[in-house]
Amino acid sequence: MKKHIVAGILAHVDAGKTTLSEALLYRSGQIRRLGRVDHGDAFLDTDAMERARGITIFAEPAIIRSGDLTITLIDTPGHVDFSAETERVLAVLDYAILVVSGADGIQGHTETLWRLLRRYNVPTFIFVNKMDAPGADRAALLAQLRDRFSDGCVDFENGAPTRSMEDIAMLDESAMNEFLDSGAVADERLKAMISARSLFPVFFGSALAMEGIDGFLAGFERYTKEIEPGARFGARVYKVSHDEHGNRLTWLRVTGGEIKAKMVLDGDEKADQVRLYSGAKFTTVDALPAGSVCAVTGLTHSRPGQGLGDQCDADAPVLQPVLTYTLLPQGEDPHRCLTALRELDDEDPLLHVVWQERLQEIHVQLMGAVQLEIIQQIMRDRFNLNVGFGPGSILYKETIAHAVEGIGHFEPLRH
Image 1 (spheres, helix red, strand yellow):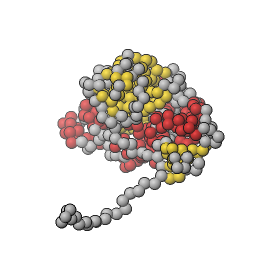
Image 2 (cartoon, one colour):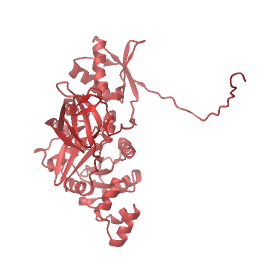
Image 3 (cartoon, helix red, strand yellow):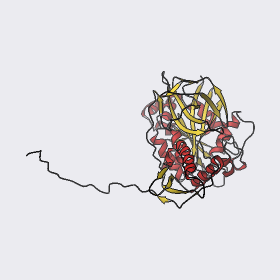
């Protein structure tokens, strides 16, 4: 039976996330040549800045077909400065693929991603990459995953948990009953446990050396299940961007019904075009069914996290900027700078671009120094504005320090 899964691939920077995406695309026949991040020719690093820096900055989709399975794979940024882009993607995923470095184990940002996956309740497959690195210890890494993530992290060697059935049975009462009756746990039960986030299949390999890719693809095809879509139209926006011609693109996941070109989506705004992207290339289509990920033109007020049709809005994001910076126009027209930053704020609402009338200054909120450099480069490349930024200052939030009891006395009028 054919099925379509939307999966996001997440990792701490340099764990090999984009390399694994490249290996999956190559093994499934979607690309003819393996690109490399360090060579600047990876299929999913479509932006010149990504190729130059060797990091993923923008979440990009690719379509992978393997047997009866079609995966819309969304490659997300690994650098902590762009983690807000990663969080926005989580609300539209069926499954996540969390990549852990076999050379480094679980890193700080990996734990942040794990907490986000738990918050958004995303079923997760784990791929431990770089197992060809010196010192990579399979048993020690699996023990670390169980200790710091969950006892449900189970080795799915060669795509199946043949030697781990007893461990799986211990995780779920129904699975235990099946195991005691037949000595095994059926695939349908395993799928249900993965979907309920009580079981997390773990695969080991090396994406660069194409090791473990076949087993992972086989396991992903075997143990995922398609989510039943709603009958009426619904969609959730996860990203806003602009193409090279300046067209505003609203990226969304169709959760119910179907999306059609010229369909009214938001108020009186219509989807002029429906684009199906894979990497940098897209095809324009008349309609797409539920489960599809696409970009539409024609919407001017859409925002990340917004629900369309029958779909509700997503919760407010957990990750928030920690630094605020003052823009230094450096001879550029401040009004042009503000207009340009407003466009970037449209794409990433967490920039919180503010014009401080009293100080006659433009303030933006950012995650860190790398994001600051990227904003400067975008201002230069897209808007032809050479601007600088003052030293960053930390954003503080007030909070209640301790409980206080208050007592008051009320007297009615003319008491």
